[in-house]
Image (cartoon, rainbow, N blue to C red; front, side):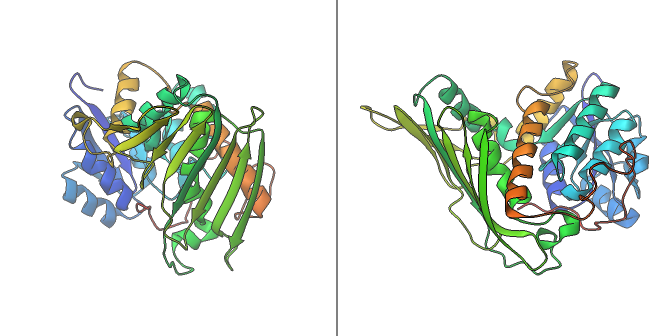
Length: 355
């Protein structure tokens, strides 16, 4: 890091990489110095679009670039283990898109690698960094709704998506759960921690990925969470938490809200709105600021998105997939052929676009 800025590298050139990069340019202490893609032409086009000085046609060159303080990994999640692992092994700090990996085994490998090398690592769960969601969590912790009894959250988009689309491609970790369901699950676990029991049902595609999934998560306290995700229906995409003395309702787009309503027994509803000074709710700036704050403080993980919390969410996603029968290529083996091999895989070739 320089005295004035944190230097970012961008790994992948798809839609979400572009959206994140655009938000970085709104932060005076962020500098984007390099971008990498499997395609040199794609990397150069991205670099020209944003005025980035260096463009690489392979991931290794970015991972070895010592002028990069932190790499934002925006590949499809089937490639997260390889991309993030490559960067961590080379000494780079990493912000890795959600879902963190395909499964908890891969996630644990990345966490172990980051801790071994003393590098910063964080899942890009921008919802956890959103000021409005942070306020919801604070109110729940402070007992504003009493003891939590239930959480409800959904995220669905209508499609339709052809079998070749990344959302239906098993090689790219396709399906509603990992791409969209990670938000409802993460929301529930932000408020209640890791569940004690998981039940789930799903409708699967011909390719073997989930088109829509519903799950009930249970805690020893008696709290329940109902979560739903879909790539075949445009759901309300709302969330709520109900307690013994009230409830909180978050409207459409609950994972990047600009407001919510607190209902308490015997009181008028109270609406909370985002502070305009924080910028747009649907912004990646909040998580980028948190990464840069942590790096300047010498922290290797964020208290807002702790690695143990990421592992806990991955365990729940694994449990749901176990219940619904979704398996991805290469998951049959109990261990990878070489747990230290973080090479650039040849597939998938697509790059992530925003949901």
